[in-house]
Amino acid sequence: MMSLNYEALFEELASAPQTKEAVSEKAEELREAMEMRWPRVNEIDESQRDFLQDEPDRVIKITESTRSNRPTHVVVVRHPGAVAAQAKYSFVTKAVKDVS
Image 1 (spheres, rainbow, N blue to C red):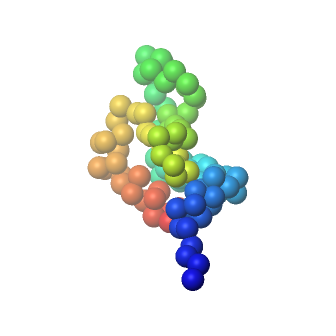
Image 2 (image 1 turned 90 degrees about the horizontal axis):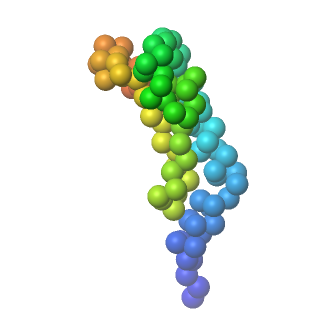
């Protein structure tokens, strides 16, 4: 009887270019939905923008995670009022529902 090596199968699927591309596209789709739900997210003053070292024009940043063997992207809202906006508008929750 032959058994399937699920760990090797997972590794192969996770490292496939199509899988990585699909995860990247979902992260971008989430960022777009978040920006749609909170249109003023990118409106910050210059002193706040100075803290956005990479991608200074985008407050919502997407980073590919390298700490996992899974294809993972982290979507971060780098805005001083993000917690208050989430509480008031539920922009993150609604955006995740849009993308799901």
